[in-house]
Length: 548
Image (tube, rainbow, N blue to C red; front, side, top):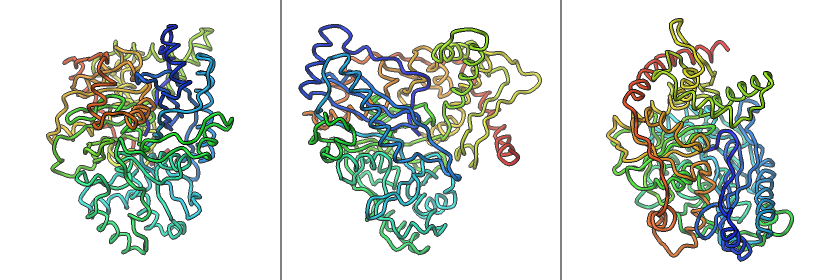
């Protein structure tokens, strides 16, 4: 799930002039900066922002999930190693640029991929490997919970994983002391507190917007269902406590400081904001936490978040209801498969260019593909591209993934049409869900886009605008995504403002430069034709999973 950038990130220009560099140096030395840490699906990022809330520097570390014994997972030892590597990269960049190494911050925060299943025993040791959002083995549990609770419970939600483990009579269930998400786990390692921000908690169990915590009526119903199958515990006892944006969520302990910075430079005592999921930090980073605003994040997964101005009238399999970091209900369309297949093809073309003796890096190849997509026929010339590396519930409950490129004999095969089909394929399943939202009466005033796919303005946002038939806005910080978003939530923790929306409007985005792309009617019709063929061809995915 995570909002990852595709290709290599561009360096930030903050502090490039001497006056700005002096201001940044003093801010770092005096501890007036805020740190955001985000564990995405392919990169762990550290983003440091100054008093003006703009990035001063970023550090990163690449990692990847593993498909181990039928489970998509990350080793928790890699979590610690990756955090240390990203923080070290950040600190080294700051030292080289400003001749000072950060020892403290005004505040810091942790964000990570939402949902999944991380079960710990009484000694806080993992009972089973971390089961990420990408796993689709919880079909029966999700269906039964959705029926009993009267709300869609997606396969990736933590409660679905727990109930499926109960149904499967997994031995570890009797030893569970605590459930959390990846962000919650890292936050506990840094502070010793078992808490979650409301947005991330909403991916574990449904939230009651009136109370800002887990829905008491649904908790009672879920406890009854679990007890019917032999589970003796109480859900409330194993779920993290829920906090809203602006509430302090503990302080960095000496052990937490040593975990982040084994060199010993970083000092304990720094306050932390509530840990959040990448969906919540994406909303903050795109200033889309108000009703009728929405954002699309594209990375290993792709998802859309639409802040609701009224409750959904029906339960929809393709839509789950989560929350902003302040607890406002959000309709989420989450797809397990994003831009990974597009990036894989870009790598193939990079290898081809190298074989021809051309010196083309990944960024250049990627830009050629995206520019080519703009030149393709509106409906991709009859070419279909499916990006399914993993199962995809919205696309007809696909249990597994098989990436495919399919065309009819009379299709028009060209680089431009191929590239356009690959980009439209990234948005295909997402738009199946977005159309369900539109048919439910959910309206959008503006749609923001973020993630590395949108870092070159004027390219992909036009194709997204056509797919969504909605104007798409991209800001200057689009590539920094959730790492910047959680840094902003850390800054909000220490702000004099008590309202997050006002904080973002008056302090962060007051001078924001947005590039707005309106949908082109010809491209809209082209995507509609593509999506009609795409939906009809989903049966090919089922056959491919069965035979390959």
